[in-house]
Length: 251
Image (cartoon, rainbow, N blue to C red; front, side, top):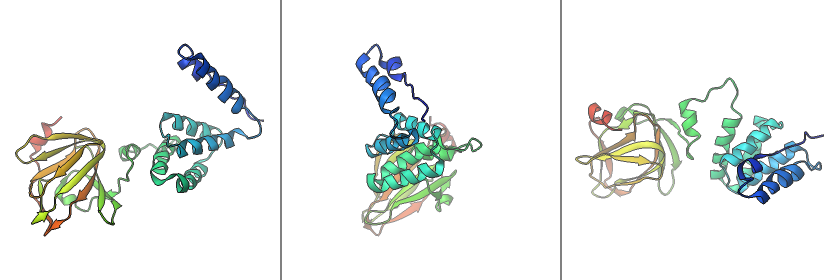
C-alpha cells in the first residue's frame, strides 16, 4: 500500500488569497488523486514528470516532482531513460532542460558539482571541449558546435575572467559576425568605443573590418552563440590581448 500523501502548500501559500484553489490543490489533487490506489505513487510520479515535460514546464514545479520521483524510488538510470524516451516525442530543447534539472536532483551525495557543471545546468546549449583557438584567448574557453550545416553556429563559453584578443573579421564584401548571448555576463568592445555589458538575450552585430573583443566578466561564466557571416575573401586577423588594467577596470 502506498504511503498516504498529505499536502498543505496550497493553504500555506494561497489559503487567504484563494481558499478554493488551496482546497483543490491540497484536498483534491494531492488528497484524492495522488492517493487513489489504482496506480502506485512511483508510477504517478513518472506520469507527472512526463506530463510537465511535454507541456514545456521546466521550472521549480518540475524540480519538485523530480525530487518526489526520486524519493519514491525512481533511480538515476530510470529517469535518464524516461527523459530520453520522452524527448523523442516532445522535442530536443525540452530534453536538455529536464536533464539539467534531473542532474541536480540525482547528483550523488559525494559528487560535488563543479562550477562548469553548475553553469552547464543554467544554459540550453552544451559547453563543449577546450577551445582549439585558445592561443588567442586569455583564460580558459570552450567551443561546442551547435549546427555545422547551412549556417555554422558554435557555442563559445568563457570561464570567469576569460576573454579573447582584439581581432578583426576581414572581408572584401559581406562578412562579419553575429553573437547571441545565452547565459552569464560578459562584455563586447569595439576599438575606440566604450565596452558594452552582455547578458542572456543580448545580440551583437559585428561588421567586417571592425576591431573588437568579447569575453566574460571577472566574476561570471559567459556563453554566446557565434555565427560567421558569409563574405568574399573572409578571414579573421588575431591581434594583441586586451590591456590587463583596462579589463580589470570593468565591473
